[in-house]
Length: 497
Figure 1 (cartoon, helix red, strand yellow):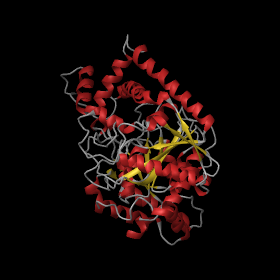
Figure 2 (figure 1 turned 180 degrees about the vertical axis):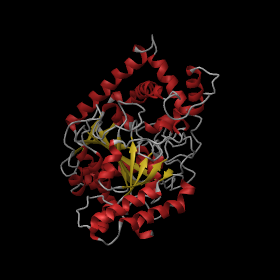
Figure 3 (figure 1 turned 90 degrees about the horizontal axis):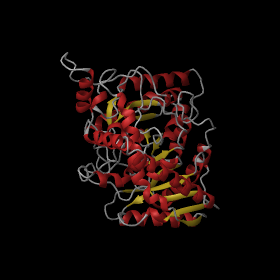
Figure 4 (figure 1 turned 60 degrees about the horizontal axis):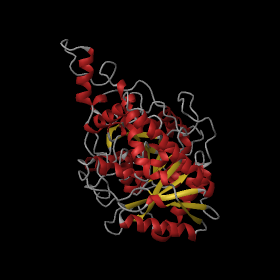
């Protein structure tokens, strides 16, 4: 089992295709790992043991019939509990959807199944993807396998922790303001936010519709690229889906190079609030890129300083609209329906019981920002700032091919450390939010450990919209150089396990 769970997704698929391993053996090994360690980590909200084994048996039957298998056939995956899965609970980390069994699959779920990826279960997350630590889950926090007293990032901490704890070689996350990249950074894994609209949002429970984006999570750049290729592509069921070819991400990951590329470093992505060890590892990464043949270009993007403020008006505003559908009348939790309350009272009682404090906070902020007399002053102004940020990116990409930065200002902080300080929590997404506002593509990959606490540091790579392959080209080159010199930052065995 130990050898199987430490294989990359690419290696696992190759061994299944050749018959060296069966998909059932691989699935059973990961289910055993979940059973052994997830009581401590709490990465999963629901493990679909029977469903996963059935999918694995189907893959083995295909191979026995001589059918050609896809590049990820039989590889296990942990799915963030924000995507609908037919016959399997989808809670979005909230009590308001506790016990809800969707009658349909999200488009992303369908594509995973069509590619014969084995879905192990649904992972823990901040309720409705609102948070940076997975502490806002109604079902309790997830621990970081590097140190179980630390957060695994958020909102997709369950997915990142599952990877770092070797419970799955692949995972799916969603990124509204950094919820794929920030968890990847603090767990020493790889996370990619594709170009907005590149991966279908149909069947993904909405938080902030103009910002939400599903994407791949893995332990290597190549594995992330293979998963990206499976889940991306146009979907007529999603009105925001881009009708364009998927960039050649796998080819880029297999042929990583930065020779002759122009790499931008934005001066706004450092300064007060950044941990010394994070800056040290980032500066080393920039020096490495230069050594590998890249030209480093200093950039000034003044509007980036306003990104956090704009985001926390736009995202709550869209959340207050999207979450209005949870009324206790159609699906999910229903409270107070005893014949003595009106429909309006049932809705109010249901929301009071079903939504957690952070969700209520954002609904109230958003409702206020959209209210009569305040819309132009708050939401309208935030959208103008969003335009300025997009223009800063456009000007930057006239000078450079990609931009790099720290993914997060600090390494993983202690569980509970920022629970009562929303502003401190929001600062975890300082470097990731501008990309969501502009709709660009971005990746986080490990770039070593911070010397002061021996915890992972993430390097963020940002590319223009629809140039997602540049992320993999640069990411693969950096990863190869790191592995050659210092070994992979993700240890053979997670330190706390």
